[in-house]
Every structure is written in C-alpha cells, then in structure tokens.
Amino acid sequence: MKSKIIAVICVISAVLCLTSGCGGAAETGETLTVFNYSEYLDPEMLELFTKETGIKVKYEEATTPEELYTKYMSGGISYDLICTSDYMVKQLIGEGEAQPVDFGSMQYSSNIGDRFWEMSKSIDPDNKYALPYFWGTIGLLYDSTRVYEDIDSWDVLFNGEYAGDIIMQDSMRDTFMITLKHLGYSLNTSDENEIREAAEALKQQKPDVQAYLVDEARDEVVAGNATMAVVYSGEAYLGHEYNSNLRYVVPKEGSNVWLDSWIVTKKCQNPEAAAKFLDFLCREDVATANFEYIYYSTPNEAVLASMDPELKEDPAIVPPDQAVDKCEVCTQSDPKITELYNELWKELKAE
Amino acid sequence: MNRSRTRFLATPYIIWVIGFTVIPLMFIVSKSLTDENGSLTLANLLAIFDPLHRKALVISVLLAFLSTVICILIAYPLAIILRGSRLTDKNLILFILILPMWMNFILRILALQLLISNNGIINNMLGHFGLPPLAIINTPAAIVLGMVYDYLPYMILPVLNSVLAIPQDVIEAAQDLGSDKKHVITRIIIPLSLGGVGSGITMVFVPSMTEFVIANILGGGKIQLLGNIIEQEFTVTRNWNLGSGLSVTLMAFVLITSLIFGRGTEDTATGITL
Image (cartoon, rainbow over all chains, first blue to last red):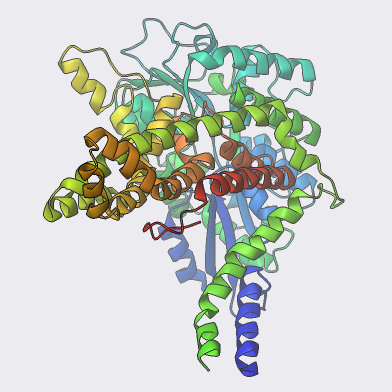
C-alpha cells in the first residue's frame, strides 16, 4: 500500500517536473532553438542546415511580436535565435536580451545590401546585433474593379466613402501607425495628444470597418467580400496572384517600412552554431528558397540580382524608392507609450 | 484490498487533475491576487467593474444567454418529436446531429464564415433569386449563430435523454385522467425533463460565456467578449495578473450559473450531473 503511494508521488513529481520545464539537462550534440514567425522560413532549409552542419534545429513559431516576446520572456523554453520585427528587436536589444554577433567574419553576410544595414541602424545603431531577414511596407490592397478613383491616400479609409468595405489590421501597432501617418504625424511619436487623436480617428472609423483581421485580411479582398484592406506588401503580392484585379499602393502620406531581423539571445550557449545558422540564411540558394516560400521583399542582393525582372518591377516585391522615402521604421518601444497604445486599443475594440 | 485497488485505478485521474486542473488553477488564482511585483492586491479581481470589462461581461452574458435560449427552443420540440418516433428514425436523426462533431470546431466555424460572408455562398444564392443579401457576418448575430451551431448537440443530448426517460405509463395515466396533448407537454414532459435542461444549460451557457475564438472569426474582431479581453491580456498586453483576475471573476460567474441550473439534476437519467 505504502509503496503504491510512493509510486504515485514519484509519477506525479515526474509529471510536475516535465510540465514546469525543469528538465534543462545538458544537451548532447549541438542543438539550436530557433524562434520565428509562422510560415516565415522554408522548412526544407532547416533539414538542409542539419544535413550540412550536423546541428539539430528545434523550431518554434509565434504569430505576433507581442506573442513572441511573451513566450520568450516567460522562460519556458530557452531560445537561441529569434526573428522578430523592428521595434521588438530594438526592445530586446535595449533590455540586454541580445548578444553581439560578428557579422564581418561571416562568409555570406555581405549579401545583405548596404542600404539594409543602414536601415537597420535605426534599431541597432552599430549593426552589432541584428541581421536583416525580410522587409517591406504596409499599404492598401484594393480591388480595382470596385473603386472609381486613383487610390493613393489613407484618406479612403477614413472618409466614409467605402463604409462597410474596409478591412483593418487586427494589430495594435500597424493600425495606429497608419492612422498617425494619415494625420500627418510621425509613427514613432511620443506625443500623447497625437496618439489620442489617432485613437479618436479610429473610433470614428470603426462603424465603417467591416472587420479587424490579420491573416484573413487579404483573403477577404481576394474573395470579394471587401473592397480594400490594410496589408503587408508581401501579402499583397500573393493576393495579386489569386486575383489579378487587385492593386497594392503605399499611400502618399507615407507608411511604415518594416524590417524583420534575427538576433542571437543572451541565453544562447553556442554562439558559433548560431552564427553558422545566420550565415546559412544569407547564402544565396537558401535566401532564394526562403524568398520563394514567403514572397516578402528580401534584403539579400544576391537574390535580387538573379530575380525574374517581372517580379523585380512589382511594387509589392521590391518597394520603389520613392514609396519608401516617406516611410518610417517603427522604433517606438517606450513602455509608457506601449501602455498607452494598449489602453487605447482596448477601448477601441470595446467601442 | 479492494479499496487500494480502486485507488490505484484512480491514479491517471489524480495525475491528470493535479497536473492540468489544480496546478494551473493555483497559478491563475495566485496571479490574480498579486500585482506585477508580486505583492498582494485585489485590483485584478475588482477590475471587472472597469466600464470596459463590465461592458464585455454584459455582452458575453447576453450572447451566451441568447445562444442557450435558442438551443433550448430547438432541442425541446426535437426531443418531443423523437420520443414519438420509431427507433430507427431516432438513431438516424441523432447520428446526423452528432456527425458535425466529428470535425474540428474551428474548421466548422471557418466554414460557417465562408457561408455567411458578404460575398459568400448564401448571399450568392439569395442574389440569384433576387433576394436582398444577408448582412450578419461581423455582427453579434453571427457570433450567436456560431455558438448555437457549435453547442446545440450539448443541449439536445441531455434534453433528449431526460425526455426519453419519462415512462410511458406516466403519460398514459395523465391521459386517462383527462389531460389533452398540450397539458401532457406542459404538466408532465416539461417538469419531468427539467433536469436534462439544467445540464444542457450548463453545457451550452458555460462555454458560450468563455468563448473568444468564435467572436474573433465571426465577429470580425469588432465585438469584444470577456474571453477576448482575457486572451489579449495574456498574449498582447502581457498583463497576466489582470488576465488571471478577469479569469477568476469569469469562473465565479460560471460557478454561480452551474449552481443555479445544475441543482437537482442527479435524479434524472441524463447521465451528466454537475
């Protein structure tokens, strides 16, 4: 009887041990834990990496920067490499969660164009931590058969002309950023009044909005359920593939140019293996495979050089310079501003 | 010997309950009683009185209530019809009812979204006949429809069980004593099957109250239920204390509902008691 109770206790404690994640015993052989957005890397490339280097990859996914940050900070899994968005990269670097990487000594890091290293300086001033992975703009995807004017301004989302036919992003940052741009402010503003004004504009707009969506935003325009949607440039390219009446535009007031980058976390025990992984991602064949898997804009010059000219001219694949000129990288990671955004976003959604 | 043996058989259950109910519950309760620095506070529990949260709670209760009422209105007549039908018909109808449950519920909700969206299948069909389009996607009505669609079997099964369990003798006795059809239903069948309805209410009302996925997909992110706010607090805002506080308040609500409707269900033949 007693021995049975002891056995039960042993089983329970073993289960507890597993669920609480205290099984952090030393790994034999080299392993990297990679944390990325969902569908943001060709899975075959992970197999190729393991085949070439013998380093095993544990791959984890998240859908939003906030979700990624929450999972990372909860400490349940010790991640070695993280790919996330500009402001979140800046925040992680600022919080000392990244460790410096010697990009200069990598064989293929020079494939990343100078202008992207330059762009990356807004979040990582010395190019010490972040490796640019994909980039693009936020703009409007619209069905050209359902509009009777040239769409070139965010105004169409706010003037009520397309009431009930608009899809907004169900993502706090993106939605506030384009509204700030529409009002003529910087999307990195720290001015509370400007942010509140944007929130007010969004509240007024809400009755006109058909839905706040993330992944389905594009599909709703493709399916003809909505006339226009706020989407990322890469999404727009695929939307056009499905329905050739769709057009993508970066409005003239400017927008957000986003840059997703890789960082090596401070918890990473094997920086050499992490550097190998990053170098691998910069290699032309790998970067091409990933580009063809995702169809977002690549900062890899080697991929750009060998790209099909037709693709190169698509503004959703390679944003033209004049469109990018008025765009800003999001670098706002002040906790107070984030809290204000959280609060206003909650109010908007509850409206 | 016998006792220790039954205890041994309970081991998987004990491990399950401790690992997946007791420990998470303790974690949630302790989070809900502390602030981000770990000091004790009641603020997270009182946060339900914040106008935003109160509004979300009211909408959640209202939509859950509507879904439950609609489920009862569908389930009861069906149960009474099935009571009178032949055994083979009964099985077939039950089979058809349970069939959708073989599919993942998110898939079913996504399918529903395709059906009722503005340019969806239903509106295309209506358009063919020159009828005005149905504009319910991204409205509270769509959320209620989704909840009824998903949770209806959980109402039908206990209601049907308790209606079928009423002995034919009782009904014949009522008829002998001069009851007409209407009175048989209102005075005999309904009172005797209330237990099943109680189980049904708990099983439909509770998940509807805590729902957030259906609200996201069919509500277009425009309608905030309390479940949506809790989800946001955990995934976006990263305020786990507030999220836990709201969860605990929601649990209290659910518990009260179950106590009200779950009472006295033991003596019915539902097989499901609370």
